[in-house]
Structure formats: structure tokens, C-alpha cells
Length: 94
Image (cartoon, rainbow, N blue to C red; front, side, top):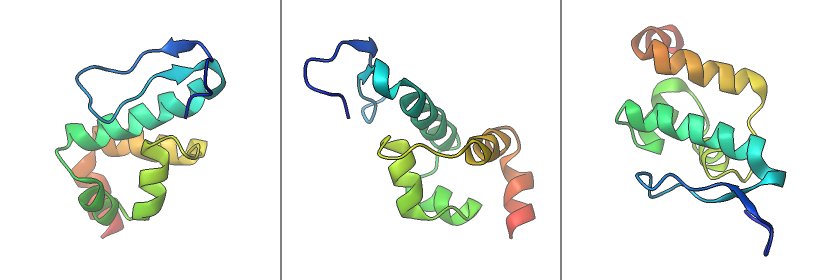
């Protein structure tokens, strides 16, 4: 979450009610959070459905999307593959 009085360098996306303003100190974490949330919402899945379908712990997914923790690079790569080939990934993890 932003530090009080720290300047915002990435404004929240107005079309995304879950998005938030981001200060410089949290830019990387926020960009990854946005990428993960957009991949999920583009597929039309709730957090619970996405987590179940792609075998991601629900609490971990929530922490990533709300930028409480920074997802590791392999997780970001996994979400990018999910966004491009959701059915193939779902079949692979079934």
C-alpha cells in the first residue's frame, strides 16, 4: 500500500475497481499485481475459480493481486502462459 504523502507514479485504472494508486517504491509489485488481475478477469474467472483451475493457492493469488506480496518471476511467467493458452494449461495441470 502507498506510503502516506509519497507521490503516485502509476494512477489506478479507473475501469478496474480493485486497482489502486502506486508510489515509486511499489511499482514493480503493482505492475505484477495488475498483470495477474487482468489475466484472471479477462478469462472471466473469480479469484477462487482461477486458483482452483490453475492450482494456485487462493491466499497467494489474493496477496499477489492486492500487491501485499510480490510474485516470483516464475509465477508471472506462468500467468502469462495462462493468459495466452488457458485451456492448454488447465489440461496440463488436471
